[in-house]
Image (cartoon, rainbow, N blue to C red):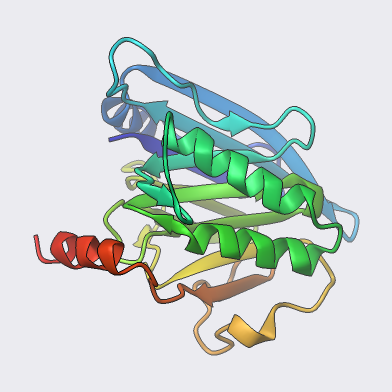
Length: 236
């Protein structure tokens, strides 16, 4: 079990409260990492903060998070397990494997809408229980969500000028609600039109989101063996 927290603000970097840091640390006592970034839209600068706490499950080696790409500035906060990515079984650290796949998807596309489609395709190819927040820095897009059965927690707290996500609610502040597990969500600074073919126009997550928000339903799992695993997991 690990912990993640991410924030997006118009008023400078906003970090978690000491109370929330303590709770996240209990979820991941072996490492705590924080990365700050920023994106801009229409002359407005948005400050971002990403924090991950890690519980090492494989010997004494700790894979630090958040995952950061020095070249593009993209960031991933990951909590969960990826059994397979597409048709390939995951070998090594699954979070790193997911991050590498998302970086390949975004680096191959110059158009923001095509990059979003590539990220969504990559996320739909992941089999396993997980929650995540991913910054595609090159195209100024933030993706977040939980797996199809919602087996890893992710909550949100939102005001018109501030938005944050966390594995657990902050006891010191906010009106926290669960992120629904039926879709991937994207906040975007792009002026391109959203992907209408898979967007649910009527079911946006948060009416007062700080940036335009789109919702993309998970595709149906096409692997029979993995579908059976999902079914077993869902009835535990």
